[in-house]
Image: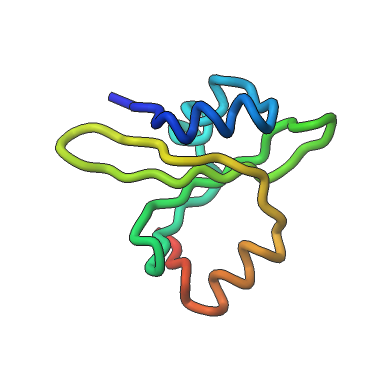
Length: 92
């Protein structure tokens, strides 16, 4: 079961991101990471956003048989690379 937090719902509305995107990203991610600083899982997928194909990120927690998606936002490839190089994100 996938749960959308109230924060995620606000971000979807604020950033004008389609409501189904977090679920699509979680189910069909291109890459997955673990953020050691925030202790959260990260999933990334290329999707159309604001007329461009962009990497979109979700941060989520997985516990007791369900997934709670916390937030969503676009992310650049250099940001992903920097977080991996610094050791903040571990590829899973």
